[in-house]
Every structure is written in structure tokens, then in C-alpha cells.
Image 1 (cartoon, rainbow, N blue to C red):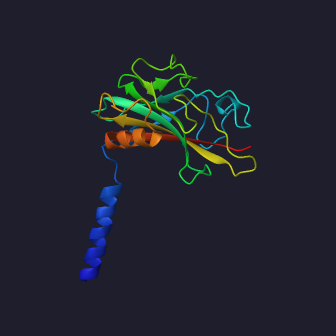
Image 2 (cartoon, one colour):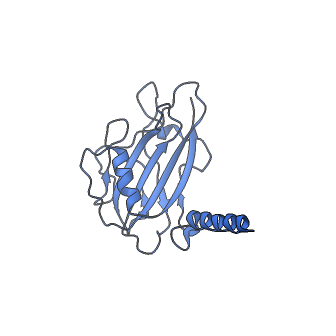
Image 3 (cartoon, rainbow, N blue to C red):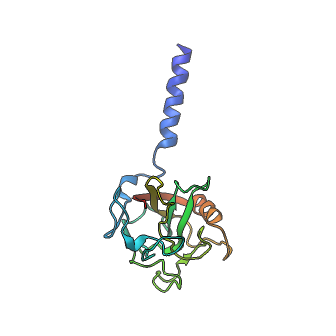
Length: 188
């Protein structure tokens, strides 16, 4: 009997730990007019180097208002299937003001001119502070490209200009109120 109570308590704790961090999490969502969840990325979102020939343009992204207390947003694109042992960060944007709920197509352009005022590009695994499109190895299985918008409780993330995507990710997760995900795929 005691073992059953322990198992029930453990299950209840697991349910609490996996519950959303705020009420109404289902309402926070991410969409794109250019890519659809589960579908293949367009050539516009493919890198234009390392043997890939694409437009290297970030897609237009739109999200619903974040949870109560959202003071800024961050957006990332990550490939967990990259053959690195740690995945590949293709895009990191942070300090997006709370009143902004979209990024236009090609917001990831290297100059940053298409970003909302105040938003900052972080350094990607390509070594640049800009969008870097999909470019999986030839013949590899389709890779997943996970676009995530994070609602943050900080107005500004204070990170060094040359910070790695991992450090920026740590800062994002330390102030995260919620997140919404859109996953596309690509192979060559």
C-alpha cells in the first residue's frame, strides 16, 4: 500500500513538473506564411555556401502575444540532427520588444536592418551574427529545423557581443516565461 502511495505521489509530481509554466500556454503559438510545420523548407531558407545553393533568407514568423509578464522575445532556429554531437544553431535573435509579434522575411539579414528596433542577432554556429540557412550533409536523413519564439520576463538580455549561441540560450532559458515552436525539415 505504501508503495502505491509513493508511486501516485511520484506521478503527481511528474505531472506538476511537466505542466506549463503559466496558464494558457496553449494560446502562445508560432506560425509562418512561408513555412508549414512538418513540411520541407523552401530554397529561400537554404544556406548559400558549404555546397548548398539557396537564398539564405530567414522566413517571416508571426506569434501570438506571450503570457502575462512578457517583457521581450527571443527567436532561434536549431538543427538537433546536425552531425556535431551538439546540434547546430542557425539563428539567434534576442531583445525583441514585447510589443512586436512578428519578424518579416529576411529579418536575419547580416546588417540587422530588417530587425525590429532594439533586437540583436546572436552569433550562430556558422560564426556570423545573422541567419544561416539549412545545409545538412548530402545523403543524410532529413534534418529538423526548430524555430522557437521565447517569451521572456526581461526587457533586455545582457550578453557579450561575441557570446556563443549556447551562452545566449542559457540567458534565454533563465528568464523564459513560455515558448512556441514550429518545426520544418530539409534534406539534400
